[in-house]
Length: 296
Image (cartoon, rainbow, N blue to C red; front, side, top):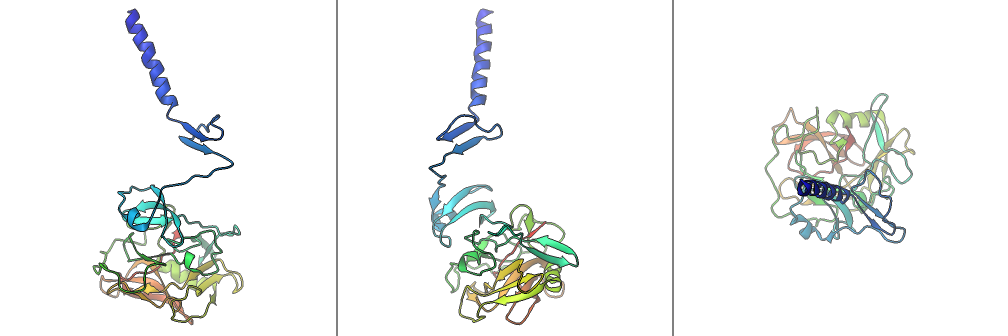
């Protein structure tokens, strides 16, 4: 009985020791770990350095949602998180450097938050209303979460470009699907929401509107032409046949989640921006367009 009692006490002490080791604090001061933290880092002289790798190395990783790395050749370098199947995204925000919420009216009296930057922007600390390469973001095919190109991808044809359109239901208006590339709490806007932005806000334009692949052209909306709350860079698009870049600095195309009801199942709705117009249009789902996420 004494041996049994001693064994019981030993097992209890071992269990307590294992439980205590589930929390860990690393840094200059390793006492008083936060009771809700599994791992806490504390320092006033050193930072956290994640694994660093180039794009090719990143794509070879068998990633799961939530995995984080620093991609050395994504734009000018970018901290990224794996969010979905075949989808790496940079850290993005709905608040700009001035603390102003980004968004627009999507109907009379109905203001919706949008992310301040295109999905895949490589620097989300810049002013979102001044278009530069770092906020142009990625290109996506309709109905898919995979990144098909970004602002640093060469302009010519892309080897292995997918010319098969996503099926109906890959993205839908009524809810966010598993194929939606936007982060938690956001989704690809509907055609109705994009039409609402056009109808209920004041538009203004920035840049030269030259078809020369410039990064400095954008369209903005807000309560007045001088007060911008939503700015979309004119990032051009990737053509459906081979993924080659077209019209950056001259036209901007942004996906909606809405399927085409008047064309074949190879088409979907998007917002088309030009120097004189902004309107909804139908085009091939296998084109690579920009995505600007709206709050759910």
